Length: 161
Ligand SMILES: Nc1ncnc2c1ncn2[C@@H]1O[C@H](COP(=O)(O)OP(=O)(O)O)[C@@H](O)[C@H]1O
Ligand SMILES: [Mg+2]
Image (tube, rainbow, N blue to C red; front, side):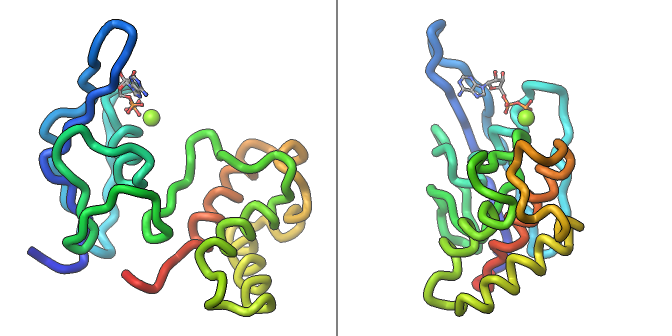
């Protein structure tokens, strides 16, 4: 097995529902090498988000496992950042503070306050949000919210992988 890769091995995901168990995924295998770009395409409800939630560590698979560089992952981690479909920004925080929240979580103790500020501003600049970085989510458009989510995911870049 190559060292730098994400591997889903024989993933099964069953959800308990009022009408019994619902099987959302069965025997899903997927291997993505470092640097490889992969699109998961399928009809609505086929299980794309469920796969991504498993990779993000937000769900635990009913069977099979998710391996990152050979190690099983069962919880969220900065090396598997997600841009959420519904943006998931804290509504009472500015765009800057939303990115800062994630950056502090990942880099506390490793980056100085000044470095963190520069890193947050750099990532907001990448998505052209410099002018609006002190606005709150309800003061910006849907596309701008998504761009803040992208900046947040990029800003969590971890050096371990
Ligand atoms: N928490 C849940 N409880 C029960 N069923 C779920 C849950 N999450 C997803 N599902 C079901 O699993 C299937 C796959 O959902 P999802 O991964 O969100 O699809 P996609 O992202 O491809 O549109 C759908 O039929 C959905 O209704
Ligand atoms: Mg989806």
